[in-house]
Image (tube, rainbow, N blue to C red; front, side):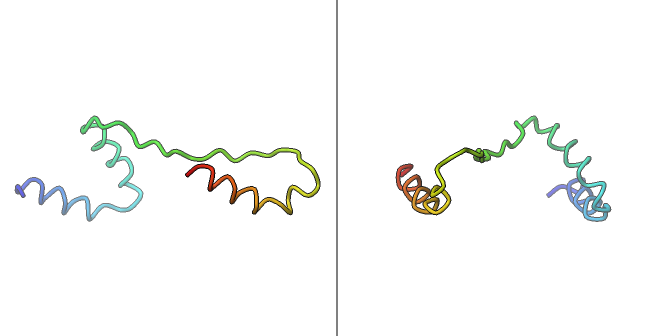
Length: 68
């Protein structure tokens, strides 16, 4: 590792936590890598028959097996 990289590592380690995020953004911008996108599953609400809540575990198991 070069002397400059070692110094950079040392200086970053000394930064207070609240100053890490702006520096991290700056470094990521220099690398020109696409931002990380998290694939969050949709969670919604729906109307159903009264026994829907009682059958929810059975329905979820069926959906899990269906996606395989």
